[in-house]
Length: 344
Picture 1 (cartoon, rainbow, N blue to C red):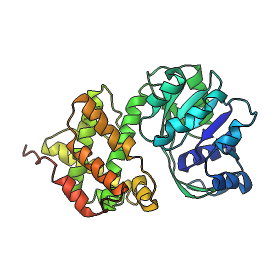
Picture 2 (tube, rainbow, N blue to C red):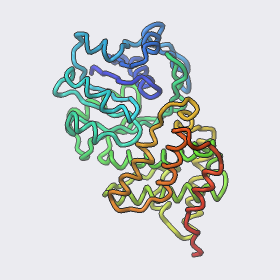
Picture 3 (cartoon, rainbow, N blue to C red):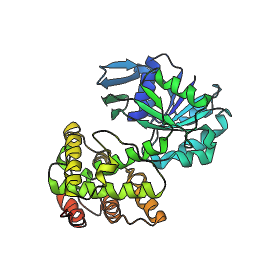
Picture 4 (cartoon, rainbow, N blue to C red):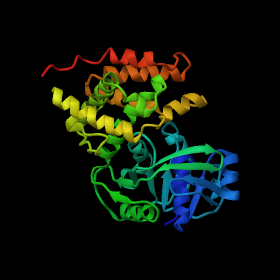
């Protein structure tokens, strides 16, 4: 199966490198000409949990590829930032075949926007389970192991989806889910939690280090769970990370059970810095519009009140625009909105 990876950042570059190592025919597109040059020669330097390897990739800019004569890909793996979804995909549509599958490897829930361009029958949602970091042009680190979960928005399975599963299975543990929307929502809710660390300059372990912070995080998660359920989404339980039925319990035993889950999550990802915090440091646009902002927009549409998410979103955007400083006072302001704990 010929694969076209669009966006060779942390996730796209890692997927491209692992697929090439597995013998898959891969073309990589990226707009950074220095990155493209180094990916081609000497090759992607992929380090991390699976050792260090230099992997020469067939890399080019989108303009170079559009001006060429390569056959249409059978799978297009979209790994650009969420805000670039349409701008990256639309110019490529004329070079795709009618059966080309388009797979989103992105944060957030962009599959509906992709389906509007290529059709739901060619759109594949994907939850990426590994971690990766873009270091410098030509260099990426895979920071954790993990597989992929893929699926159609309507939960169906067909030959095209099976072929995508076979493609990914060459390099990653991959499964098809009949509830990819629930999988995507569950990951987005986890991201809506970890992004809060960017408000205060906290690593994930620090974010979850006190009961007050855990109570704030739990309140943010409860709002997101309510929005998902109002939209008819069946959230997926992620052991040790997201357990909706536990998190929505209001009694003291339920809160303590939730705290224990958050403690385990904080211990597992203690030293992880949110991507949004890194974006702030690098002065580049964040993806908060497609995580916390997505929850706020969908909450408003469903008539679900989300005051903590709305406040967090506003503060994150203010930091992004340079109108607010990162600091613990931001989390304190958010904590002041948390309802008083139940005495039951």
